[in-house]
Amino acid sequence: MAPIVVENEGEFKELVQETFEKITKRISFAQKWCEKFLDFQKLS
Image (cartoon, rainbow, N blue to C red; front, top):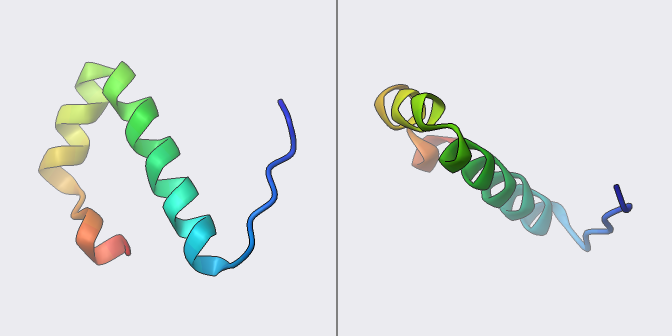
């Protein structure tokens, strides 16, 4: 793993959300669970 440098809090939140979405798309049951129980708008 390489270190990741972010410039500000907004960039960090975006990175975390993008990474989480990529991971959940790889695991179908997790994607369906996330879509059902998590509201990404509230996490922003």
